[in-house]
Length: 173
Length: 204
Image (cartoon, rainbow over all chains, first blue to last red; front, side):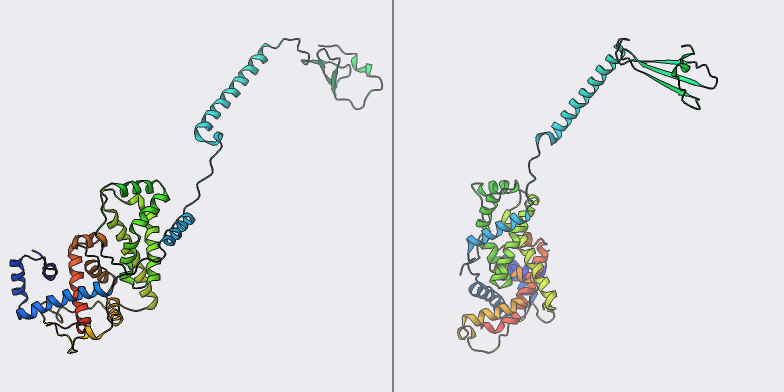
């Protein structure tokens, strides 16, 4: 069942079937002439609105678009500058993998070389413990391979003897 | 003066659909063309409600700006013009409500059905042929004043119906409300205007 408002508007607009219009008019009651006047006045109102309230043309229509596009440009964030290729995700992944592989390869090579170094490596040092003639004194000598260089670490001396030969009286072990 | 009584735009060639698709991908040139297609009708529709060219210009701009931002939410199976005019109506209602709050004025929506029965006889004031006596501007002023006393929703419903020639269903789609609400608003808007403007015409 349509509401009164729905049927009333359809009646005003002449969209209500004749039988329904007659039923509505009977429902509304009152003088049939008054009802016709009612409908006519509201239709006239629509005519007044259409006749007197027409909108003006949009002035400066071209500028309207221009201004709108400027506002859109101002509110649209500028696109981010293109990243260098090495910062892109795919490239970063590839580069990380390649770098990781290179480091691993280098480490493997270094490890292999370490284990195969000959004993005659010129910078290989020899550690020798000495037994000095004086009790309470210990000495360690480090000799660097073919380099004619030795470091002697002496501990327990109260003084540096005037004759270094005094330290060589012990035997090498 | 340009009539805003324009039938809904049709898109037999699919050109509008193509423009919408390009707009969705951020093509401002395509959107510019859409604006050109719809700007006059959007402006006229808004102008008929706000009755001020400057305000109508600004609100039309706001309408299209909002449409640009929300084009992603437009559903292809809907009418673009209905979707656009719905935005226009919302923008306009928001603006009118803000202005009302700022000015602390109130729309006179009070229509007492007991006071105006649907079948009640119209009793225009006994002024002889006022329509002929009044200048066009005066009639317009009276219409503007009467419309201004309606709420934005009531005003829009009657203007969409009388000025745009929109069907009840189109009004409901544009305003995002039910058909019953449209009918109710139209009924009261007509009754209210009839009461306020009864002296503008003589019923014979």
